[in-house]
Length: 120
Image (cartoon, rainbow, N blue to C red; front, side, top):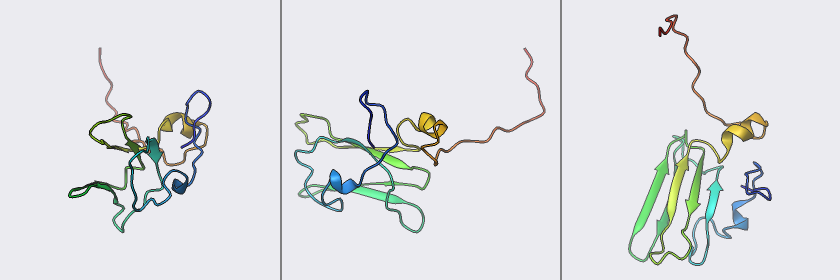
């Protein structure tokens, strides 16, 4: 997601191929990621799966349909070639972007009225 000059999310998106030429596979070495990925590819049940694979290991992270985005972060200068997947129920700054009418997938819980009054 794009940010303004103060690094605040604008809600504008760009194609994944601008960052990852081959998003379904390719080396991550040398990439400095701290990015929000939305429009996730999902299976029939709504599950989205992402993975990272080394020479002998593969780690998969699966998220359900209520997770609308994932932040992928590679700590700069990491000696361990670390990568972090952070599932998110909404994009970064979702509340403010929804209020501006930019983000349409904000999830919320409807208030329940109980008829009881709090005492105190």
